[in-house]
Amino acid sequence: MLTGFAHTAVCVPDVAAAVRWYSDVLGLRVLSPPYRMEGPQIERDMGELLPSPVVVTAAIVGFERGDRVIELIEYPAADVEPAGPGRPSVTRIGITHIGLLCDDLHSTREELESRGVEFLTTGIADVAGLKTTWCHDPWGTVIILLEKSASDRPYWGQLRP
Image (cartoon, rainbow, N blue to C red; front, side, top):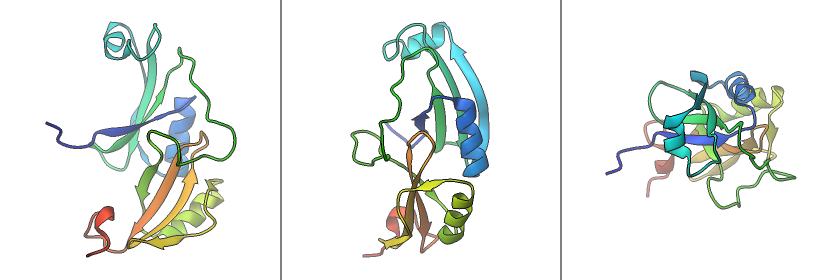
């Protein structure tokens, strides 16, 4: 049976650039630097999902070694659809955003704005025991930043019934 989360994959047009952005701008650790996979094993794994030859370039970023990481992934031999025009959206079918926790949302937002991060909301909201604000990466992946009111509970359990 299922036992836990491993990763969330974000498809990007350039893994090296994405690694720099997620580490330099957001402060995630590079847990596995960019690596390229091609050949019979990756063909067996993803050959029914991508045209041959299957080539994958990927890197892993996160906050600590272990599962629950972000996999930045590029498919250099495949035609990948660019992000749609206009503002990124959370109303498309499929994965709509990545949630990242921070200890001080006000200072985190100010720091990220000084690094050029574009925010989708003008301020910080208080909702369900959380402070929240929304931004996106340079390729259109939406990110919600969350500050918990009770650090001893998971983000989804901030409000007690």
